[in-house]
Image 1 (spheres, rainbow, N blue to C red):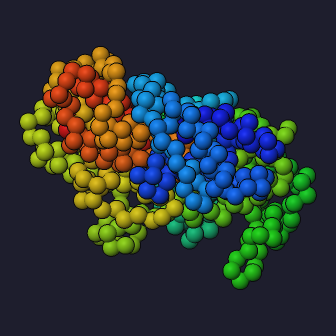
Image 2 (spheres, rainbow, N blue to C red):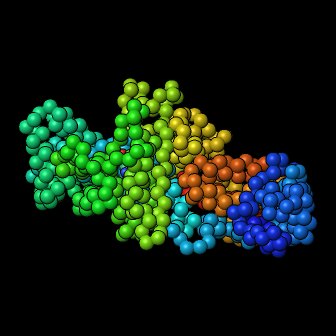
Image 3 (cartoon, protein in one colour):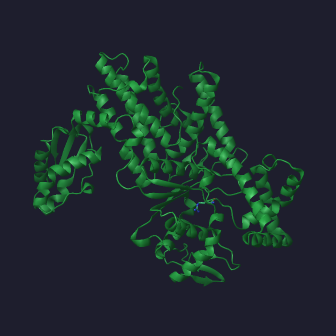
Length: 591
Ligand code: ARG
């Protein structure tokens, strides 16, 4: 909506500003909301910016602008001036009606931006083979998935990447630890997926790490395995592949429960870059930034120092020739830029990796890898805080262990079932179970997404499952309520056509709110903060609820008013299900 209004303003004012040698750009017209809604819908602060060029007081310029814009009656019903030089605009109702009718029902399509799509890589989830996902992986998975969905809706070409921890010493350890078991099961023709679930792999891996520390003989064997695996030993590579599949089996089960869009074809684990590592180190050497320090190859940058002033190097090759976490990521940057032709690469991990990514970005920039043939590749680290228990400490079970994700999600569904059962006991049993899943999983995801990701947040069951407040169930409920209006009225949604006409302030407020959604998607794309979308949907639900309290729909005083209000309801329903869809949350039609 702001872009349309900006266009109108520019075309009306450009003659005036050219007198002063100023060429107006959309960026100069930011259209904040006035401090008080009674002053209008938007404010123009341009006069303050133009005063110098025009050699006039801002208030004088504001008066002239107001004069010009008040002739645009198709757009503005009221144009006023406020000191020291603001122009306040009130949109004409006909303009709101027109824009909303034009936007139509296809809310998803209205989110697409104009212009060439960007190629964007979103690196998220990044689970480690033979280890259960921890809460950090859960947050990365949930937040990354929303970012990928929003960017797709904006029209970008999105490449999802799951940077698995699937190579190097930890893998050698798990191979060493599982080899006898794998062989035995295979010999017997047993079912690997049955007998080696992730929890068992994790046990074997844990034991292997202890043995590695304590037993020099085993350590030698594990080192041997690592060398042979890296050299491509057929049997080891086969085992490695088997372990990866076994381990990912459980991960995909969780993705499915969470409605996360990652699939096997998005796997770009560390192993994917294994043959690019030596090259990457050589390229760093060519850049002239590689330093040898105690046998290891490192990059030192002035800006990365510990508190005590000691340098924090980026280590890319250990003294034994092995490569580091950073080397994989540097190889990945080069791959994304050169092979995938990425315009933007987004990494989603917890804030403990802030230094790691700051270093990767600095190295990539220093070597010019982010500026291939005059293109600039934007690198973003989307970081997030921790999940805390209600005691304010990192989330643990009562007995002090790390919370198992599957248990947590099951508890969410069970608790949601109780809520649904109480609210609507007459729903058919399988539908109740479907709603319980949608609400329970939605609540967990939404609790995460609705907080500014930079902050830690407290995981509180009662709050996230509440039917009021900024929660998934509240939004889902608003959506279901609209569906029930259509159901009660025996109205097929596709047949709702309007025309839409504003007759009540609550209708005007709701229509204006609806028109904001594309700007919200734009803001999420720019800032990579899903909570902006959550806040919007919460506001939309609130504005809808106040409309519905004041404006009867099915029992409206005339056919015309009823049709117009049904039209509004239909767009709210579509905006709500689209918005929840971008958050990867289901919107049941009945609750
Ligand atoms: N596997 C890593 C971890 O568990 C996360 C990977 C994140 N992505 C990346 N490109 N480094 O910490």
